[in-house]
Length: 347
Image (cartoon, rainbow, N blue to C red):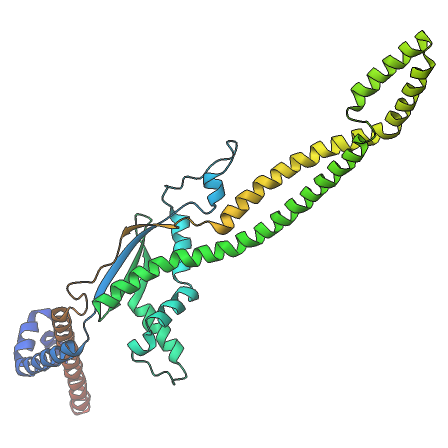
């Protein structure tokens, strides 16, 4: 019994693998030929796809006003600087947005192009699955972003890749402009309110000016000097006129000073608001490209998928390996059955 078990184990060790292959050579050859023929047929039926690629670098500039109109004491952004990891991740997030995917699907009628039934309940899910399988966005080791589009029409693939790159800008600008427009409305409202306050103060000062008050400190000092001189000379008429003038100065002088000091502060704030208003207006109305295009997509001259010889070779060897494993299992099962049958008789 022990000799038979040892002999059975020796039949399937690595030293006798050639004998095993030779023993089953006819079956394995048939399997290999069948796998080769079937994989060739399948490979030939797979639709060819062409790949188009766009390489982008994100820009670091988000605010046009800070990049171009900022004061000297404010750190300006470099409009020519390439973005880094954070900007690349933001670019990928925008490229993967529903807005870009929906606009591309609608523009190129991808539901019909991919052969999806428009009455199917899962039509949108199938469409998005096809979109994700044919259109990919990747970050490279150089912190650029690669857009790859696969399609059986090389012209369509290149058009979609270039359009997606353009849609990144329009989508990001729309998102930023919504916020910039709200900021502009807030700053504009504050600016106009402050301008109205300044104009109201100017009107009040003009009214005080109509009473002859133009410079409280100097007028008060000179009038007092003239008043003392008039008293010393005994000029009663001049004293009376100067007393009236001093009463007016005393009545409106402090109000004038208050308005003047407040006007100075309000004008200073108005100038700051005007600067912010002009910056916000630029951010809400002007546009800078949000990316650097390193390479545009062009129609591919040769297919990228499928690589038919790889499919045939891999499928054939995989099928052959599966056949060998299946035969080994069958041989082992047969030997186990024989051992079970022989066991009671020897006992």
